[in-house]
Image (tube, rainbow, N blue to C red; front, side):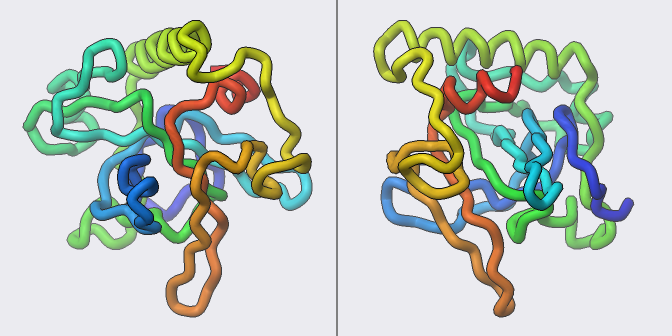
Length: 195
């Protein structure tokens, strides 16, 4: 399957995911290509490209309140391995689609760019738990409620975020890719995306 021109929530792709701990340590590239779930895909008005946010899928057990276990039948549907896996809800990468960090699903399948689409009940569980994660962060005072920022004011131009998350400019083969913000989930970002 060719790379889709239009990404959408629920699509599972292989992506070089940069964890926030890696970014804080000064790393600019993900250590591992991994399956990730697209949770938002918003068309940008100036250039009609999509701003995409992905959550990572990992084999490492995660706190149940901050993750969604992937049922074995869903893993089979997506063509993933049989090992237990979780979708982590408090880590997110953002990029402009298609981005230089997307990968084919396997070296044996160089023209296949998506694993498939999550069933609606799995994606609804992600949405519900993600809302709870955001509410907990707001109520704990880690993030101020209602602090939405304009995408052109302050911070990193065009990211809609403050200077807090590190950005990386990606370059491979002499072609510059879009800046990518890597941070823990920020409710001001998610609330604008109607998760």
